[in-house]
Image 1 (tube, rainbow, N blue to C red):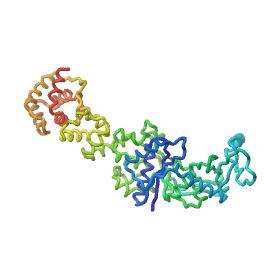
Image 2: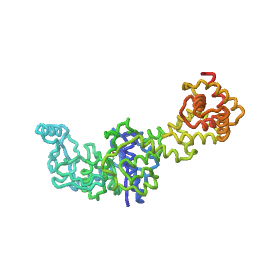
Image 3: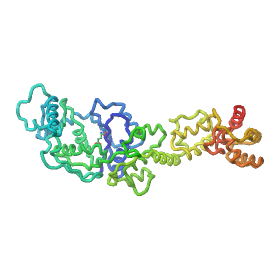
Image 4: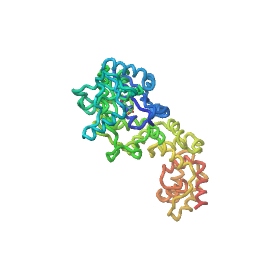
Length: 457
Ligand code: GLU
């Protein structure tokens, strides 16, 4: 059975790179009928916070990636990790190192002076004497003195590191707390993780983790280290390029379906297909097809996908989603059919929920200024139209259409002559949704708006 995990460190919001990693792990496990676990790596008390954990969980809940069983918190497992440290000490696979910080510093300095790579010189590796007074020891792993640590990375290919390039690295600090690579390895092994998909910033940790697995007698999982997401200029993604928290995307009005679809394509492809339902992803995704080249974040593509998904959702769902956005109170007073026409019209034009709510304002809020009109006949035409309007009904799109048609015919007007005038008088500017729809949505207010335009201009 495939068992994967997502293991964020709660140092801040869940960012989109993290969500992409989570998604890959989720899709692989769930697509294979396996298990997907969530583990919070919260042992670094100075850098971790409860708020950050909650922010991560909130983002997870929003995107709807379900995980199996309880969330595992590393901070609750310190005793367990310590028992494994003890086990390694007893098996002579790890040892206590009594070197003080000052001694280590002095050693590094002398190595630097000699032009050598600064590293611990293993001086306590086989120490059997009486420990020096006043130093609380750290615990170091006995890294093999020679040989290779080799593994086949599912994305990078063969990775080989010479054991002699690695220090006897610390697995427990002087205060007894285990170090990062140690807890990750113990947990991955105990949780039965079969496949680890993570960012390639962790690639250099993997040989160390493999040594810990081996020392503890655990079997190795498969590793897949995915390259970073870069901006369109090929540089590290900054906040300005879109390296924001997942919930920032929600607040900007992106749909989770669009965001997930967008993220999965950053580093994975399936022929030329761009749009994937979750079912399709579960069916097709495989980490074996993850790309070894960095992927490029295109805000334009995210908008394109979001616009696509906006069109596919019902207006009822849309209204529920818009509750979180700034909507004018007048929207609530529209008849259901007016709401429906307005939302359908805006869905065709908007890329995000935020721009859609702005679009609702643009129609429903009376204009505060008017774009200038060059047509010298504008006022006369508008007065004539208002005259006809008093006799007409705007309670269906057909009636609106008939009114416009009859008016244009009666005055021998081309649509291009009159429509921009009507649009500016009604909405203040020339762009926007179809005028017929705007007239229908505004209904009773149309006459008043035209009157106001005549008074103010
Ligand atoms: N906690 C690590 C991070 O947030 C991930 C560790 C891992 O996936 O092995 O970067």
